[in-house]
Structure formats: structure tokens, C-alpha cells
Image (cartoon, rainbow, N blue to C red; front, side, top):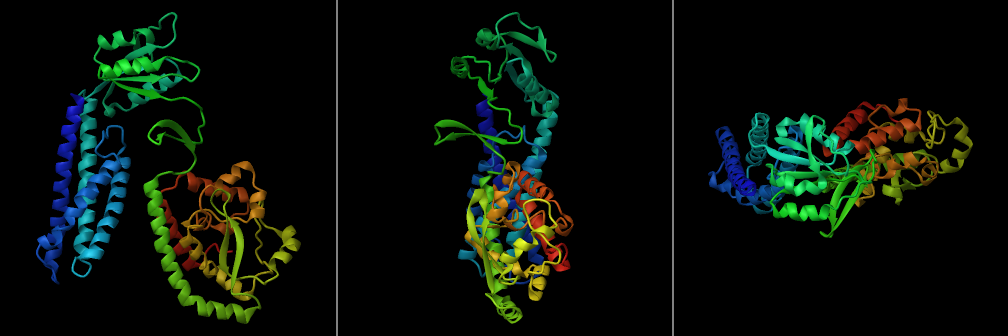
Amino acid sequence: MLKEQTKLFNRLAVIGDILVLFIALYLAYKIREPFGGTVREFHSYAWILIIAIPVWFFLLTRYQLYSSIRRLFVFDIFSRLMNVHIVGGLICAAFIFFLDRENYSRTIYGGFVLFSFAFLSIERIGLRLLLGHLRRRGFNTRHLIIVGTREKARRFHQLIKEHADWGLEIIGFVQALDGELQKEVEGDPVLGHARDLLEICKNNQVDEVVFCLPKDLVVDAENYVRDLEEMGITVRMVLEFYDICASRRQLDLFQHEIPILTFHTKSLDAQQLFLKRLLDIAGALVGLAVSALLFPFIALAIKRNSPGPVLFSQDRVGENGRVFRCWKFRSMYIDAEERKKGLMAQNEMKGAIFKMKDDPRITPVGKFLRRTSLDELPQFWNVLRGEMSLVGTRPPTPDEVAQYEIWQRRRISIKPGLTGKWQVSGRNGIEDFNAIVRLDLDYIDTWSLWLDIKILLKTLVVVFRREGSC
């Protein structure tokens, strides 16, 4: 019955979404129409719906917005819809570019995407809030039994109680251990032992059974799962293999066959990483175009100021220890590396990084290039090649990495960037390498595409104001 209700709800949701897309395009057309200019009949723009409807349906399904949203926070729904419209908007824009680039109104298309995002957000978030309100009053609830009475089971119980809008009602607990039966746990009754689970389910209204068992307690759950499935009851298992709080956990099927639990400390969101790469490519192309325009002037200034090549390359350490050649406009004298050894005693930084306020190795032109960040323009080539990103951590040298402590190595678990949190956080005022690492780790732990965009905007402000330069 519940499956049939879900299918019906999804069908209604799809119909509603198609209607929203049509209204969004029509409204964008009507708002654009009074402003004059060349505006064709509505049907000349409506063809984009043939592309948008299946694309939106695929993305909404991919981001699980046709699944139950009872356990999603409002921000989660908002974020997923934003991803849908960024990816879907780019795909449809590509079709417009190749099929009707000259005649399709960019204003109408932009309005369509914005209105679609606004209306679908109102629709999904409104539905989430309405259903949450109804569930708090006992409508559309699902009845759960928790197998286990220890800490994990109690924590799961606590989460359910704290989120009444999920519409999950706990009937009681089932004790996994033999021996004297507890009367209650966290205020809810203990209905029996694990061996009595099937009888308990027969005698109660049960939609789901959740196994919350510690790793040192083995219960033959396979037979229970088979029998409960035959009864039409959903079974969930709260896994407790290792208690590693710093890691994110992700459970997948390897080759759709072998269950595999992954621990990771950085984002593995393929969609956002794909968008990050698109942003890198677009930014690199713009940066290289600017570099090409400025190259003759910068090259002439470098050559006239000091002997040596225009470009400087150096081995730097990238993602997870990958070594690549990092390119810059030369800002130092050609014997800078040899002179560095004699200057180590004047290092102003604590830790595995060298920094000196009035570094005598820097040429007069090099000081200007560094103050304006023009010396880093050739690194857009590294970004285009995929060795670096627009935003990331500072690319260290192999010598610096050799001095890292274990916890500091996590900063090279992602691609290095042209800019990052350190560069927009007043880098001249930071004298402890550990503080730089903490900024990098905070970036890794909180990474999102929106965070990259904010750092890029802050970087532009810093560059134009010439703040925090080395």
C-alpha cells in the first residue's frame, strides 16, 4: 500500500514539475515581452521544454527529490535544487547555443531558469513543511521497532524523538541479548528478545525494523531480513564498524555487488566536483587570455630588469603527493635557490614554509609582480591541465612536504589552488605554518562550490586593493 502511495505521489510530483517548468517559461516570456526589441511568438521559445523536461526529471531523480524528503532539512532541499538548476541550466544553454544561438532570447532563458528554481523551491520546501506539520500531529506516520538496547540504539531513538516532523513513531525496542528482559529503554517498552522478533511484528503495526547493534554483538540478522521482507516490512541496519569521528562515511555497492564502507575526509560529490572542474576550465581560459595580452609587457620588464628566463618553473606537490611543474613569471634573481640556504636563519614563518619580508632575492620588477599577483598568471596553464584548481591549498615544494607532520599532510589531499582561504585571510599577518594548515583543513572540511565562488570574489578584492601580498 505504501509503495503504491509513493508511486502515485511521484507521478503527481512529475506532473506538477512539468507544469512549473511551463509556467516559468511563460512568465519569463510575458515579463520580457513589454520591453520591446525583437521578441518572437511564445512557441518559438517553447521548444526548450522538450530538452528541459527530461533533463530536469533526470536531475531531480538523481538528487533524490522524487524520494521521501521527510528527513531532509530545508537547506538540503534548497541546495539540491540549486545543483539541479546549475547543471540543467548549463545543459539547456548548450542546446540553445548550438541550435538557436542568434534568435533565442537570453533574457527569457535566464528568467525561465530563475523562475523554475524559485517555484520548485517553493513547491518542495512548502511540501516538506506542510508534511512535517501534519506528521507532528500524527498523520502519515511510519511505525518502527528498534532491535538493540545499547548506546547506538539509544542515540537513534534520541534522533527520532528530536525530529517529530519526520513522522517516525517508535513502537518499542527488541532486546538482542538473552537473559532478563528489560522493561523499558528511554521511556519506550522493550517488547521481547530478538528470537521473538517475528512474533512481535505479527502482533503490532510495524512498517520498519531498524537493527542498531554494536560490532561486538553478533545476531543472525540474515534470516530475520528474509522473513521480514516476506512480511513486507522494511529493514534497516545501523552499521558500527569503527568509530572514526573525523571521517565522513559512505556506504556503496562496489560494482553493484559488494557492500563497501568508505571513510574519507574530503568531498566526493561527483556533481559538485564536475562543476568545480568546469569553473576551473572557464577561469583558466579567461586567465590565459589575460596572460597573453600582458605577456609582452611583463616579459620586457623582466628581461630589462635582470638576466635570466621570463618564466620560472619549479616542482610542486599536488593532490595526494603528485609532483608537477608549477609555472610563474620570474620574480627572483636566477641564483635565488642557492641564496635561500644562507637566508634560512631569517625565516619569519614557524614551520615548513619559508617567508621573508624584504627578501633580497626578489627583483624590483618581481616585487611589483608579486604585489599585484601578476607573477602567478602562468599558473592558469596548470589549472587548465588539471594539476591545480582556481581555489585550493597553496602548492608546497617537495622539501616542505618532507617536513610535514602526519596531520599536516591532509592539506595535500586535494588539488592545490591559485588562491585559497590563506590568501584571503590576511596572509601577511600569519606567521605560523600551523595556522595556514588549519585554514586549509577548514576549507577541505567545509568545501562547497559556493565557498569557491566566495573565495574567488574575495580574491579579486584583495588583488585590486593589493592587500596581503608577499
